[in-house]
Length: 265
Image (cartoon, rainbow, N blue to C red):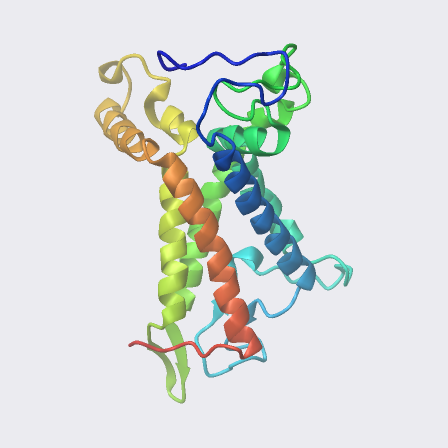
């Protein structure tokens, strides 16, 4: 706790000597995360208008575009009609965010008021068991990291597909607004993933002496880069959350015909 910060009265929820709008941050977080959760769930349930281009039946003369919510495209004939393939995908990136160290703090405060803010009283007060009780699954974050890295490769391939336009003679290279949207999304997701605390620990945080291990110089350099990115992990967390939602929304609008994707090159 910062020096001089008023101590919270543990006797009741929200009791504090703070005079600033301490509730604004948790409220904004709850609204933003709640809105994204509702949107992502609705789009997954919709199970339509998530891709365009050759083989999709929509804009066959357009480069192939695929929403990040549905990437990689899963086609299983035996899959029940009510089960959207998005649900077979979103659990992995969703699990990575749910167990993220930053997001834990964010939604613990926003949804569980645990605590609502620094130096603000909470209802439970005592008996916190952290990730040893109900939230034991949070310790799976390091494993979700591996899935996140795989999805970065898959989404990068989607950007490449968005540059391949069908022509009478075969294919040609092209760039549209959708290409920029998908590329920006991959970039922000990469920054969020590469700034992850678990990745920082994986590449060098568990090493006491870089000169004593194999590839020590390489690991030290990677750890330094991850540490520099880690300073902005919260910013990347929010920007990438908005970018993945907007990327899906843009593909949806193009697939529904409400928006014409402008080809730049």
